Image (cartoon, rainbow, N blue to C red; front, side, top):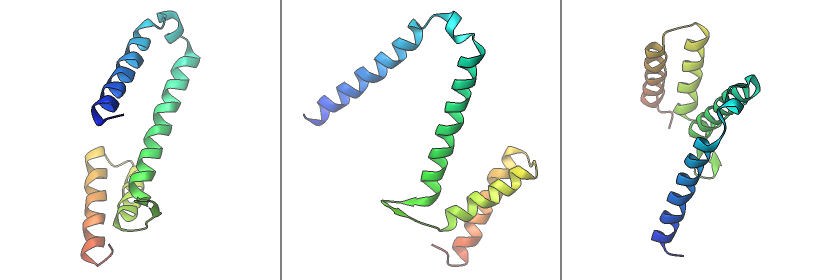
Length: 103
């Protein structure tokens, strides 16, 4: 299949998924179990995305400045620093580690 075929197939799949969301009865979405599942899936997807972006380099595991930035941001979150402070702490940690020669 050509590139445009894959793009059209992915677009159709995204549209079908969105349409399926509109076809779900409202009563199903108002149940506490559905809200819990949606919240849990969101947290799991965000955690996996963060882990892949922080510890992966191609197909290999990499412990570099990104891991240090994630650790600094986690410490800031544990200290209940506001979100902007967490971002600044992570960026500063990454900059300091890279300046120190950590790849």
